[in-house]
Amino acid sequence: MPRTLITGGAGFLGSHLADALLNRGHEVICMDNLITGDLRNIEHLFGQDGFLFIRQDVTNYIHLPGPIDNILHFASPASPIDYLKLPIQTLKVGSLGTHKALGLAKEKNARFLLASTSEVYGDPLIHPQKEDYWGNVNPIGPRGVYDEAKRFAEAMTMAYNRYHGVETRIVRIFNTYGPRMRVEDGRVVSTFITQALQNQPLTVFGDGSQTRSFCFVSDEVEGIIRLLESDVSHPVNIGNPFEMTVKQLGEQVIELIGSQSVIELKELPEDDPKVRQPDITLAQHHLDWAPKVSLREGLEKTIEYFKKVLASQPI
Image 1: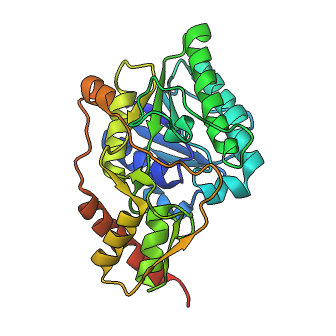
Image 2: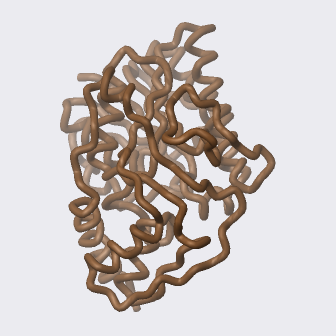
């Protein structure tokens, strides 16, 4: 039975990874300080054989007795509303947290997988984005706290790979959505669904022509696990290459919900990327992976989840 640590394990992606790895026969340890994670994401796992939750800030020294086979480093605020509110914590978990997690991987001779992001490409000058593109990032802009934390984390991961011989993997995650997203996380899918369910205006920044590509969480998790189990040490994009404008997404959410909402344009935030679309050639070739869930199907599942969450909240 492989023993796997997931930092940020009570978060959106971390909790889905915990489910998937437990189903594959792993013993799973979730570590989270709950700064953006939520115990409700993993409460169904409490008491299950092979599952352990540890509340800890991973920027502090990590001690775990016994063997560890895999470390998936997913601890970090990951939405703009979070990392703009928590800039220092975001930088610390990308630097100190990655250092501590890599140190544990070195000590335990564990395979290490870093959750990086499409934000390392910044506001890209190359479209779609391939892994050999170095990016166009403003290091001192408001989004730099997240972008540069992840770029530093990638550099440190590769240094441990080259200098210490740690077996490493790097996944560059593109926009992912699905159940367990937070209502208030500020990401476009959760925001649009929440607004549309309440017949509120959908806030679209700029003129809505900026593009994004959305991957349903089950597809994202499958790609991440295939990368973990592969022998690919260089970064790999995992995301859905189907590209659409933000305005088109809003219109589809309104249609699926049957909402009375209208689209309301707001000023575009600083350094907001104009385009975002993964080139997944490497994932297709090395991992035999491509997304399967259509946007419509994924949105329908996510809408049902948000209906339940909003119904359970006090008025």
